[in-house]
Length: 222
Image: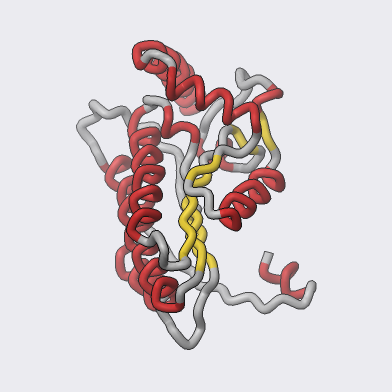
């Protein structure tokens, strides 16, 4: 990707970092807060699927998920917020998920935290010139599901969205100062229903989806 962008005349800086490794995260913080090389936008996009059950004795997978998708988002978002507030401008986009409106284990809980954290950060930075947005996409055509070992065969084609429109929706929402955005009308409607439906119904739907995913992972592993 860097080569493609450079071929178009753009300057690209690469900073490899394991966001589950705190010393690496500290290096990213140093880059974000470097006043000599200010950044205009931070996108917290790192993440992965979590298959471990909440009742599993081994919490290693949960621990890493919380480290990468909660603590690192908190640390990097805070660093960007400080640096941008000092300049009076900037944008922070946190990639959350429609899963945060459901109840499908650690991943849902983590993404619900990301959305709530984004709202809280937006409140803290209100009036500073810094825009904070949580983008909550649904099923997007990327390699995420394959890498996460999630079966997608049962997902209706009408619910899939492309990467380009999702990115464009996030950037538009950020430019307008919207704190939460759910790309596409179809998912906005579905999540409106999820927020207003009885919690028991959401738990039932989430349980069915979780059971299907867990079954597919077991079968794939076998």
